[in-house]
Image 1 (cartoon, helix red, strand yellow):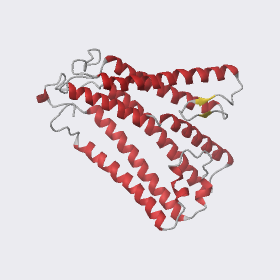
Image 2 (spheres, rainbow, N blue to C red):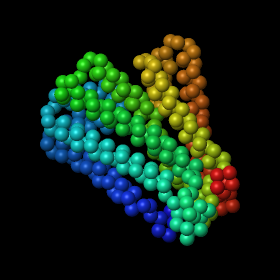
Image 3 (cartoon, rainbow, N blue to C red):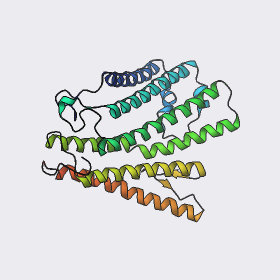
Image 4 (cartoon, rainbow, N blue to C red):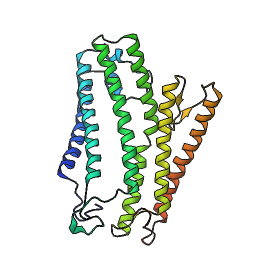
Length: 289
């Protein structure tokens, strides 16, 4: 829309990827409905999506029979397809360029990515990478249980990886709504300025601040999960230091938690405020244009 307000269409292959994403998600819904009609316990079949249950066990699903395994394999394939299509859509955004006739600054090449799009891509990468890692880890746990190839060491490794991705999942859950907020502010600024402006400079700085805080939270949760089995995360996705006895480590986690929360929610408040204060004359930022 920014490059071509009249048509606003991406590349043809990008549209195909969008359609494939929709079909894959519809296929997962169909698999759930088919399982219900077959009398299956869908609380077990959908265990891959119930990532908040920290005691997930692949052996429970392996004992249910080939129907459960077939639905699981189908959903894994469709979920992987969704993730790869999402990766392709991100590539389409990166290589998208306006036609020379539209009179943009870089008409014969690519336009620089707007801060809102940069933040959205960063959070999208973290979001999809986390869920794909969790999905593949739990699917591998089921596969090793079904084929009886799981050893005590490999099982412990898979369960720890699953717990690690579950901790990361609690952190990246803010990514979709943050992305919608950033793109909404960006689109409003474009509409107010005839598709040539941008949000205020301080609003775009706030986007980077909240995105950086989210990524710092994610990195801290992953690092804490790797180096300690006692670390967990709270509802906001921040690591909890209540079970850590090592005082410097506990202080470091609390410091990162406070700083990340201030950056995350402070950035959200500022970006939301920019929507209210945005005017045609203020919908510009020379630093990012």
